[in-house]
Image (cartoon, rainbow, N blue to C red; front, side, top):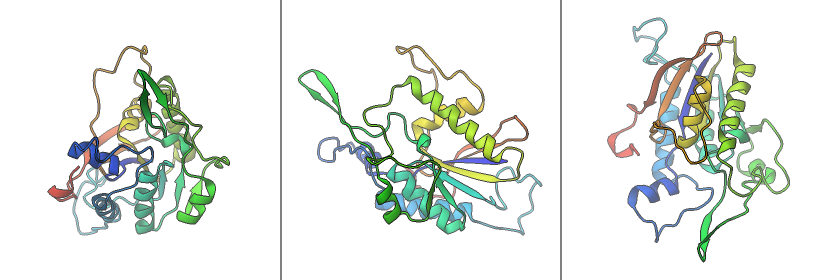
Length: 249
């Protein structure tokens, strides 16, 4: 199996942080893509679908100079991942499946101060009805509850590593020992946990500690792992050479 992680395209929250517009352009809990994000999605879809049979390269094609040959696409149920993944899957002509466990660290929530106390909103994400009407071609690995796919509130940090391990275990069980080439449309923060789960690195820390490193991830950056047997071979990370300079975010 070849496993590709793609960070979703630029969302309105991403653009907000990039521009520094913290007051005039407030954060939303489940942001959609920007116009620039849709352009990035189209270009990464074209990159992943390329087929250059005349390119002479090593038979493993470890930089995907010739092609990617994607067979399956998975994404989270956050709007920005659904939008990005839908464009990719439709361009490739392959099935796309949404997995709730692939969501960004924290889940869907807003946090505000009331007095000096933080108050977390209780939101539940998109509903099954919305998914069917907006993304009818997206399959579900598990059904969505009546209120939406998210349980509400902010995810406890100690649950993120557990969730990352579930995602990797699912992918290994579904596609291990095959020649499948699998794309997961995920999120920048969660990729850090997926990487550690995939490479069996330490994934849990005391609540008052942080990992001393972090993988930075551009919107629509591509990372590749080859997975013969139980091994995870890290081929490359955050490939964005297919994007023009003005679309690097």
